[in-house]
Length: 121
Image (cartoon, rainbow, N blue to C red; front, side, top):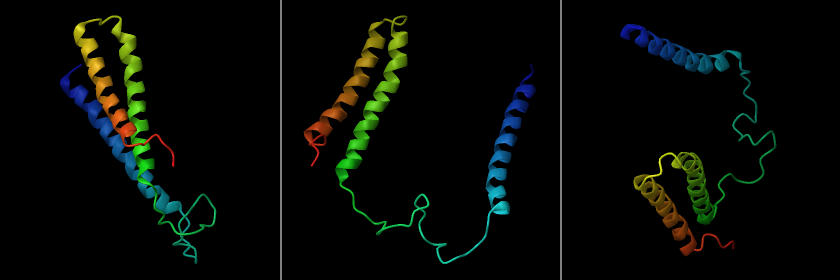
């Protein structure tokens, strides 16, 4: 295969991708219903009539709990493939990298624990 042939593949995928974006942007504008009723500016909540204001204040602990969950999630997603391959790469460098990754995530978890994030109020 020549270099020009490889660039043709890339150009083809770019054209297909750009066409996909254009079609999915224009098509709903062409086929959608354009009715401006009295409820056109109301927020949509799964077909239900909204109750109360949308401006509700949440406790910051929910946000922090979500960040800690993401730390656990990233740790799990990272560790499964790394530990699967570790048997073939058993070297001190690989063990050091795994240990450093776990240490960094452990610091995030310990920070949340110190702040009392895991105690529900």
